Length: 89
Image (cartoon, rainbow, N blue to C red; front, side):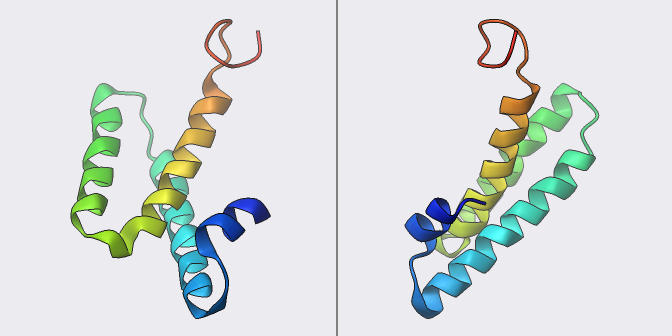
């Protein structure tokens, strides 16, 4: 996680430390979730259900959601290697 993201999302002080822990928790959840990827549409749908459940849990999970989706987005960007799809040719 970049220092800029930590600063923008977490701020400083006690809440900053808790927000940082939430981001790291979401990051760890996403890494474990990505390890389970079997390439099926069902797995892709599971991402939606997981995030929806995180959102339903309330605003106290925002840091976890941001950390989780950050890792998922990074993985998607790294996987996009076809021309015109945002990756290298």
